[in-house]
Image 1 (cartoon, rainbow, N blue to C red):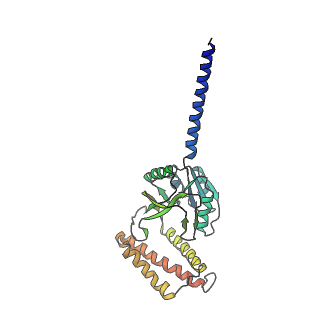
Image 2 (cartoon, rainbow, N blue to C red):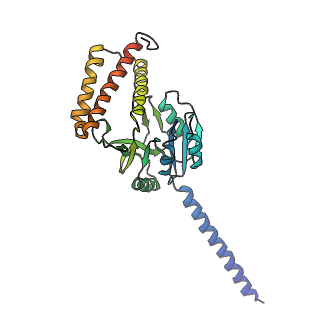
Image 3 (cartoon, helix red, strand yellow):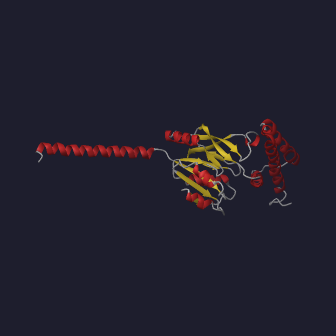
Length: 287
């Protein structure tokens, strides 16, 4: 049996011990609650060939959200099998609106945009976690390198570029149809490590994308009241576009692939102005 004094000290000890344990628990909870978290945002349509490999590289993030433009292949089911949350939402040609919709549905403080044909390197994944843990309110730009399965092109139209992909979701949105612009109130900073862009698997895919982008560009130009001069925009501007990417941007250093990509850029430039030219003659661009 414990004496009265011993009972007092025993009760005091256990009470103090419980208080200390409770305080330590609450501190751990507070620390966990203030750690910034990341939602990866992936916009997709019929990306069953890419979606699994894409998601594998962002497993380090806290949420993976796929905005699916009503794919007719297995994109949705494959994404869900990888643990992603999938929301189906029609894009209707408005890429910026779709990205803004994605930001609005993110559950974490930070968002990381990734296309289905892009991959985050291991070194970049580590760097992203480090900067987000610091929780400095900045918009981070990531160096993107283009990749092919059998060829290499590092100049001209496919030279490495920086893209704005990691930033706090609050007060951020995206505007623009064909080449959207991310709008944030945060200062910009570049990350050191790279992401990979597997831009095209086949020429059919590249030419289909060219056809779609030129259509959207023409529609945007007309909506903004941009005019088209046959001589300047259809005959001369494409020549300048070719010269710029093949000579000034050193596309010639990529050999045969450099010539092909520069030529395709010539046709991209010419076709968007051809479509604009005929939109002013017929509301549907019919010949």
